Image (cartoon, rainbow, N blue to C red):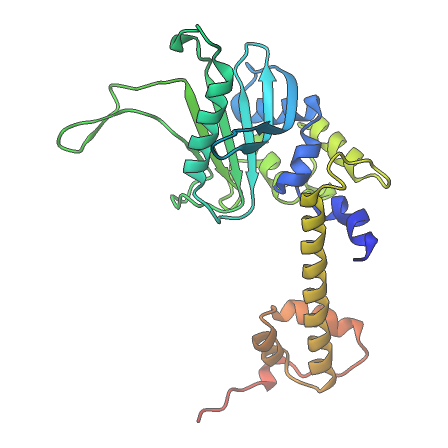
Length: 285
């Protein structure tokens, strides 16, 4: 495989990629920006462990994207998920149980379990409520099935699900951060999370020694990027061929599943005559 795919990969990746985010948020200042904006000023990050590995000899092990240590010993677990190929809610449940077994030492009382925070950031609104943020609240269901919020059942577990599909639309600090996580570009930088921007830029510098550069995951990410580049170039070749045959833009759009504006952009790069959309008609049989 072409090595340039791997060399350029950090420049193409967004922070929603768990691979890239692990490296960026291994920086304590960057993680502090993230935690402060999502959870508030009361949390002070004292340490960060990316790829937090909880091994289990007889049952399934789990590797968490990021676990932040705080000044008051409240663990914060952050996950970034692009795909919806599993049950995210049960994943968080399993992660929480795995972490709890490593927090409480022999002889300690259950009341000594600290509050724990799970921040789960996804590309799509997998819950389906049309909201950006979902915070889980445990309460009581009455015998008639009605929910009674007068009896909160706080067990110290805080689950926060944030998706990048539904914009907040409130011009807040969090809205700008989520936009930057989704599309990590210069245009989306904001001075209110300077450590995140600094860490992203450091990881994107040419020759940056990313900790996971040679890992299997990084190879798979590069191979995926290579496949996507190949598919994109293959489809562009088809578009150029159809343009050279003087096919209408709308017809090319239907054949390639690309918007007309995308095809027009390619057409401008080629010295050829292109028929306008209005010239294309679907004949009825």
